[in-house]
Length: 150
Image 1 (cartoon, helix red, strand yellow):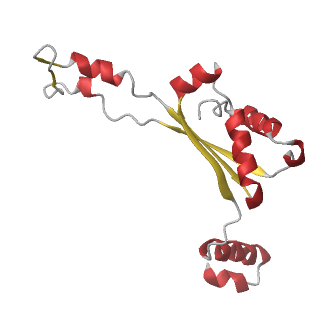
Image 2 (spheres, one colour; image 1 turned 45 degrees about the horizontal axis):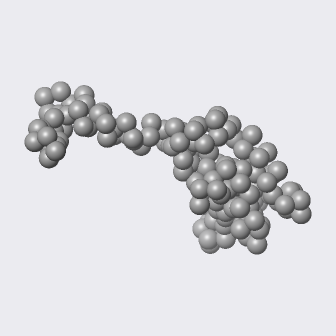
Image 3 (cartoon, helix red, strand yellow; image 1 turned 180 degrees about the vertical axis):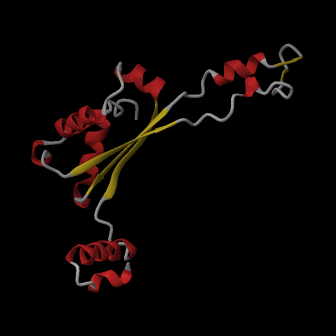
């Protein structure tokens, strides 16, 4: 692709130029905000999980009026951080010693697994306006109603 910048085809030349910028670490979009929330905790916090277009509208509304036309892009990624279910290991379960009772059991594992989030949602917001990154990050915090927790 490095040679495509001099290609006679305009589309190939444009693609070569874009790749040259990426390879030269001249990235146009920079991350302004990153938050990872468990769906369970997020639902408790906002009552419903936000769809991306609703969150974009809330971020735009949370921006100061002078920044409402700020270019930004929201990326939403769903993650399932759970490993295999340790309770379904069959012949090789995970045993935990409970010093309070002196017993070895698997019931405590169930209690611990209850606190592992089922699904994580990662929200990343990118902008081309580097000087406005702090303002955009604050608007994202307000839009997710997380600023009170920090």
